[in-house]
Length: 396
Image 1 (cartoon, rainbow, N blue to C red):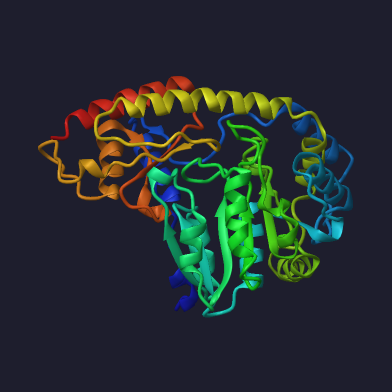
Image 2 (cartoon, rainbow, N blue to C red; image 1 turned 45 degrees about the vertical axis):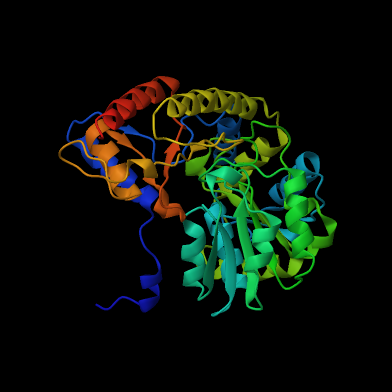
């Protein structure tokens, strides 16, 4: 059997690869601490679970409209107004099977072969794969730790060409945890205003996991209203990773295009998850706030521990639940058996020597770094940092 050539544009994400290797070692009885996946270790809050159980007991188990049930679209509209002061009608919102599908819908509906897509790096691994799958050309703009891994207006301007059609970024960012302020977004907007052909996808899935204040969306700038696509979902802020529900708020013409596409791929999202998501979005956010407080405590510990390790350089993440330290100073060093020459080897060294699973920075377009997820218990994180520190001390 010959597999279609288009699949050659897609590779297995390093995040999935490292999680798989971690499971294989665990199956052999090795005590691996897995800090590779971005999955909250909290249970889904009980009031959300109860809403799902009620939906099952009420027999709400049939096919749903492709774009989402009306009550959920209304709940998302209310949430966007309440939390972000954004005005989106139900016709400007579509619900999908996870934020990843929302991204895929948007990119496949916007990008034609040969179109250029600007992506600041580090970036979430799926962005470039989806662009390539659509026939687009990713144009990466490296952003370093000295700039908190954030794009400046000057760099943006320098990288726009006549072929530029789409810009994709996340705030809070996966993998760096960086959060754009309103002033920083204003700087980017001042550039985008001069290039009306560019659509902006703003991935805001980590919105609620913000340690520095109110979340700022680039969609708040009315001059860009007709070309901003907001992506969000239930996985991170509500510990609903396995429930699989994401949503998009965008101009009606794009929502209709995504609905047309989704109708052929998956149709409507899970009916029970949709009912539970209404409760999640419209109820108190106290459980979400408690999770964020726990993530902040873990963030403070992780960054403090990393800064004590000679040769490790890190920023202070403003949100999400990742640390993204620079580790290139270890290149050329050896423990007598293994010599480190790149970030992938560094991650494998930590996995095999310290039994700590991380993800190499090259997966996110930033060689020389690694991503550490602190979506694990504080006890696990403390043990992981002890192991990591001990393993690094052996590299000479």
